Amino acid sequence: MKQFVFLASLASLLASAVSCDVPSQPASVNFSLEIFHGDLLFCVEEPSGDGLSDAIANVTEGIDGSQVVHVGIACQQNGRMMVLEATPSHGVWLTPIDKFFEEAEYDDEGNPCVFVGRLRDTLGLAASVQRAKQFIGLPYDTLYAPDDKQIYCSELVQLSYLRPDGTPIFRTRPMSFSDSSGDIAPYWRKLYAERGIPVPEGMPGTNPGDLSRDSLALWIIRP
Image (cartoon, rainbow, N blue to C red):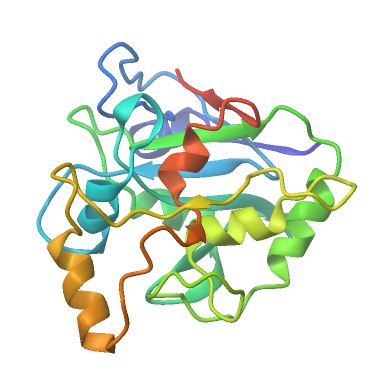
């Protein structure tokens, strides 16, 4: 399996996969991050307002309580390491991995708040990444509907990462748009009201936080 290594020349920018919001795992700017084809890159963000990332964080939970708001797929493309991801501004697309990290949030020590999730069973991994590439060009699913005409970030992973027998590695779960109060969060009430459709509470789906907590499928790389 190929790997991609960020070395000391990029230490201040891409030095480590850190567990932001997990004090027991401090960042280390001396840590070289090895990223393999097919790794999942989980982005953690602190609350900053009332945008989409905060809306996702308010109704989901990442590993060890972290606020995982996005996930991308590391992949080799023409000898270059890229990240395959679904974003609201680009839909499903490939972005250079250095750009992906430049746009990540950083902790107080200047390290990017990114976890690396590596599959415990890599059988069929190459086929899963190739399957994910077939979604390139599809628009981002702003309504998080359970179909593949439009795709959101964790849905891209869930639909693409299959075992050799065709069964999903990451299962869907009932979606929740409720915050800690148990009520539908204002962001989601407003979004779906503007579209004239009900909030799809309980519909099958996925989110990046749930993926990061799937210890049966992944192990999370930390300094």
